[in-house]
Length: 123
Image (cartoon, rainbow, N blue to C red; front, top):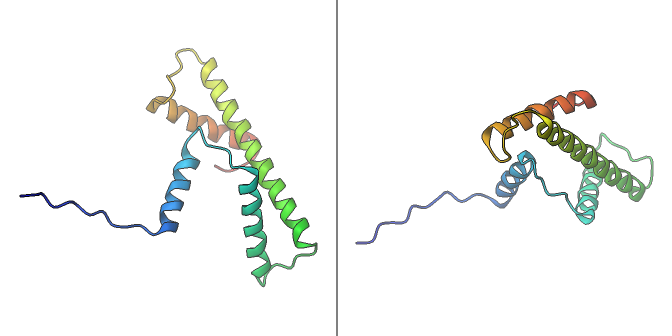
C-alpha cells in the first residue's frame, strides 16, 4: 500500500512573494535589485500615491517617479554601507565567529542595529 502524500496548504502568489521578500531582506547577503526593478517599484509607488485622495502631485508624474527611484537607490546604497561596516567590524574582532553561524548572524544583526542608530534610523 502506498502512503498518502501529505498535502501542504497552498499559498497565494502574493503571500509566497511576500514571504520570499522577507527572507531576502533578513539575509545579510541580500541581492541588489536591478535598475529596472527599482524603476518598476517607483512607478508602482507613484501610481498608488496618485490614486490616493490624500496626495496631490505638484510635479509631473515622471519627475516624481525619477525622484522616488533615486531615493530608493540611495537608501539601498546606505543599507549596503551599513552591512559592509558591520561585516568589517566583525572581521576585526578578536575571536570573531565564522560566517554563516548562528553567533555570526546574531552579532551581525546587533551591529546592524547599532549602524541604524548611528545613521539615525530605527531598525
